[in-house]
Image 1 (cartoon, rainbow, N blue to C red):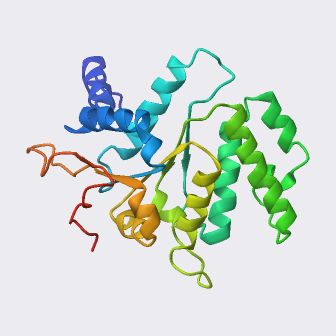
Image 2: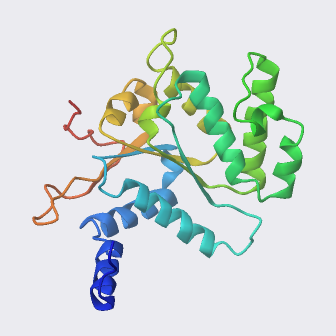
Length: 242
C-alpha cells in the first residue's frame, strides 16, 4: 500500500489521536471529588450511565490526580479495578481481591503478605477451602490499611453484582457492604443502568449510598440532561434500564 503524503499523514495521525471530552466530564469530576471528601455519611456510591460517556475516564483521572498529590510514594490513596463479565458470585469476589492486591503490589509489606498465598497470586487457581478464602480477604484488608487507601473504584461494577444461580440476588451487594463495615474506604461503583437495579436490592445499602448519573450525549448536540449527584437523603433518579 503506497504511503501517504507526509502532510496528509500528519493530519491523519492528529485526527486519530483527537479526543472529544464529554460535556459533563469536568462537572462529574468535581462532584465525585467532593463526594470523596464527604463520604463519612455513606460508603457506597454508584456512578452509572451508558457505555462510552466517560465513566472509566473520570475514575482514572481521579485516581491519577490523587496519586500525584500523595506525598508518600508508599501510599496508594485510590485503587481502580474492573469487574469481568465472565466472573459471577464467588469467582467475581476472588477476582476483585486479586486485582486489589495487584494494585497494591508496590508495597513491600503487601508482597510479603501474599508470598505464601497462591490463591491470591495465581489467577488460574481455584479452591473451596474457606481458610484460604479468609486469608486472601484478610490480605486485602491488610493491604488497604497499610497503603492508606481511601477510595476503591470498581469499573463495570454491574458484573461484580451478578450472583451465582444458587445465591439470592442481593448476595453480592451484601458481601460488598460487609467489606465497607470493616473499613473506612469509599467504594465507587461505576457501570451501566442495570447497576441502579442491583443497588436497590439491599434497602440498607441504598440508604447508605449516593447516586450519580453521567448522561449520554451526541457529539453534534447538547447533553440530554445535566449531570446529577443525588445524596442518599433524596429520592433516586427515575430512569431505569430496559
